[in-house]
Length: 488
Image (cartoon, rainbow, N blue to C red):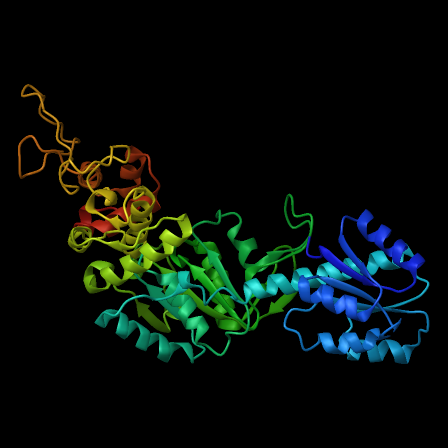
């Protein structure tokens, strides 16, 4: 619950006991004191959510305590209790920072109403702090790198952030597009307002409109209450539409209206909601190809692409790999409680020789796994990376090079592969098998060749989604071959 710990400052023993009983019955953690000095000592020792304070106390006035608390960064909501109530006194208390004012004697029902209001207010404050991006300074959201590409990216962010224009961030999966969006927000004039993120690819198609614009009670099955959408929550702030290319054509039309007119209607309502929102969108797709295939509206693309930002893949800024790897090593060593002090030269050479099709996200996952597997060593070694080796294979220094593929003898009488079967042998040796990643790539491309470029049919044969197939092909740098390649 938002309210958990309460201080009761009351010198009358009967009223103090009654308040304690009422609050503990509602499962609050209660600390009862009889003087201002004791209350200040209690508040300095622990963090409380609510203070119920009498006005007339043996060592002063509860109003004086209320005024002193206003200078504290962490302070509880304060409800003033008094037997001498008047409108003027109540107004003065509220002006001095009180959350509410209770006139004695008050009933349990009156106290219940105050507690409910305090719960709702505290919850709103906590949600607002989260939505306002209070975690944006966390190291997880730092842009790491000293390459020329990263320098250009930071320069672009500096220029774009101060403007209020819509931004479209494009780049491969795992390059850190969300981090770029957070950096734009953090340097913008809207930094004190909400930062709301919507993962368009993760929300089911039948719910995405409700996520964006909200709905009224009874608008559809299970709509038991009214719900505000993400655009309403982001009012006066910034909304990040992550993977905007996954939104259906029908919802794209409504998004276009929001971008152009800054207004929309909730589902089931005829009332127009006006908002003031800056939109930042990301995509890992080639938008021009999506427009040609009628998967994305050209007018929406032009409206989103006011300020384009392109994030460079990791393979084009390999000089950033050591810094990224070291940053992840420190982070995950601390997170998982491992005494890993560094990365060996051999391990770093291996990291520098990898092409990183999954970009920074892949590097992060590799380092995290290496830190976890490095339980008896204080240095990350090549064997901990797990490249070219089954996940369940033992970690031994006597094994072959981590980059070497696993080899097994192949029967000389094996039948010739069918047109659908990819070749699993490495070109370097007749008996050497390709890595699992290479096998997957060859099999996907062979299946696509078999379907003459029909991605929908290929996805059905491979038993994966169209989106997964598209992302894989983007990683491979695959381009459709003329008219033979049919759209999805």
